[in-house]
Image (cartoon, rainbow, N blue to C red; front, top):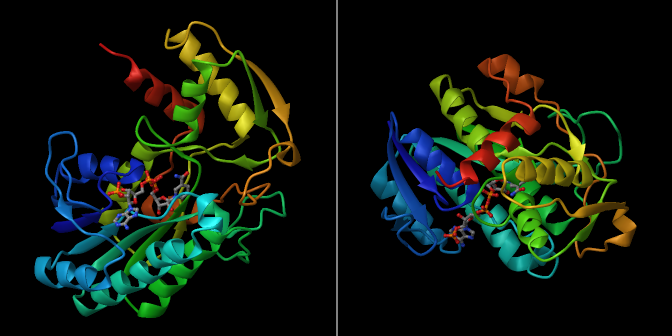
Length: 297
Ligand SMILES: NC(=O)c1ccc[n+]([C@@H]2O[C@H](COP(=O)([O-])OP(=O)(O)OC[C@H]3O[C@@H](n4cnc5c(N)ncnc54)[C@H](OP(=O)(O)O)[C@@H]3O)[C@@H](O)[C@H]2O)c1
């Protein structure tokens, strides 16, 4: 089975590359064809619709796996056109090419498609109502896939962390180097999800692919404040930081951002668990594994 992996240098993309290559031929792409940890990739810039089509037509993969996205949530409020181009239009091109070439499209979306205005875990069929440009462009990407008529698996995930690239875990550990006190938002709730868990779950789902939209996050949930508390307690325990900074819980109102985030975006993952017989571990367990991996041998 040949997998065209788009966005192989992202948090999720890189873990997919490591995981899927065990039993599949993976063709990794990046926006500029760079080497990633000494491994070569081919160039595929998602702002070039013709190239997306050409690559899929020429490579003729069994699976197109799109881990690329415009993920800068605040920046998207001013970069509306580029966010649309990458998160919606490029995804539509991919979906139509996948349909034409009869390949399966795997794609990732976000908890930010929901308003966050109720307090029980969101199901796939619940009404969407994104509060941000990022959320809207990701939702439009989902809809483009569904409307294309291709075979697809779309996984909505959330609060992704890993030891690579920009994410909350890396930001917190960086800030701890220079701050003894940090104010962290305590009124947004979600499920921190390890990029490696997403990759492994994707590999397992690929064994019995079934078209559909699925929620795919870690078990359990917390606030950014709760996430930060665990990051620092675990980091201190393994000696990654000498001392935990003092954490002060604040409300979103006291930490204005360009994009509004949902207050409650915990996802109900029962559909994924039932169909693929896979349940992701608790976020605290995977956070511990992720932090342990940072430790030098
Ligand atoms: N991060 C989160 O907290 C979060 C939460 C919910 C859902 N998601 C979704 O999960 C998926 C994976 O997210 P992630 O956190 O792994 O992303 P990430 O680490 O921010 O990586 C984004 C990837 O998109 C690629 N990309 C951006 N613009 C591109 C372009 N013009 N052409 C080709 N590639 C381009 C980047 O490639 P280059 O490095 O080559 O530019 C990079 O590989 C995305 O669909 C995202 O929307 C993420």
